[in-house]
Image: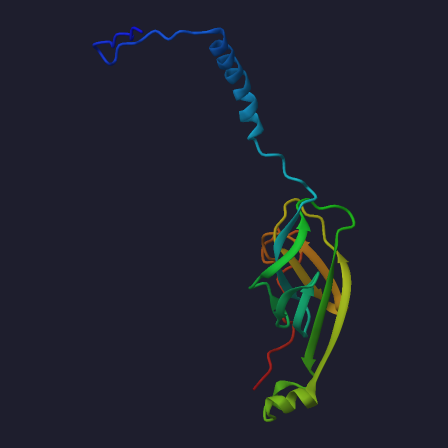
Length: 192
């Protein structure tokens, strides 16, 4: 067996014998490569896929929301005429809104039955015993139409009404779809 002589220049190109089998394997690789690359493209997102979104609450009432739950997930507690400063996790919503989409909201709302100036001399636990009123409520409410999945916002309105909005900004933003301003306490400040 005669060995093929080594080229004197290591960069000199050697001729490579191409056999029909080698040509076939190159043709298969070149033909299959675009198909393999296309298979790596991600599938379009499933509009029915459920995604976990944060919960925030905004209270438009004169009673404090002691706590609230959206589809079983704890939301927080809210002062009267306020909220929106914190979020908690998570409620599962579909990527795309669909008609009939609703959430279950359970909440406890309460208030003192006497102004602070009439109860400030009473110890806190006695204030709760004599002057505190609360009630627990539950409603299933529609989720307002959204174009993009963001945080869910639960609005607590007078007369135990609830609205559910999905949006990235709070009602202080004029572009908020609810058209509501941020809640303001209409009562004069209590004197101490």
